[in-house]
Image (cartoon, rainbow over all chains, first blue to last red; front, side, top):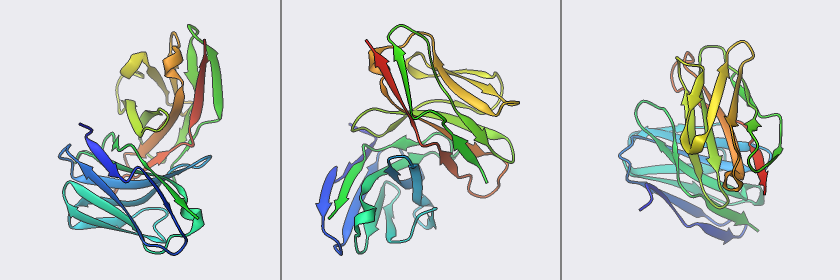
Length: 112
Length: 116
């Protein structure tokens, strides 16, 4: 079984809809991250969390919110989706040492 | 501010030939450097990292990377390319002396195409 899972894997939605992307991990890591990937821009950090009570904004948090329901679960919400939020979204985890990150398979989101 | 540059959008190499994927970085303190690989429809997978010590770092799948402090580079290399190495490669850096949350900055990625 994969260590970091994301649901859904693909989602098509309409402008203005609220969307939630979910991430679960079995690695026992405290640190979790949400990134978006756009062609030519690489990966950009949306939010990160060092434990259940510690959530921080990344470089592109506007239009997004997160919830850390448990050590193993970290959800990303788009309150009112817009077309420029069409992207590939990745969840990642790392140990407390903050070293290499382990990525989920990604969610391809299309906002029409 | 820290940054990473991957100057080549795509690298083409013949199967069996050596490959190099270039990366240069900029940090104010000491760098912590990574290479990740992304296969189609998959998440990024960690390949190797440099923290300190030997400038030549060996990683997964026969890849290695050479840290060059004077040139601020961390190029990814493999002596003999395989068709299965075709993927998107990302270089990333952390500034170990930045204090607080040590953000990881990723490059924009280099597509490696190994030609049979």
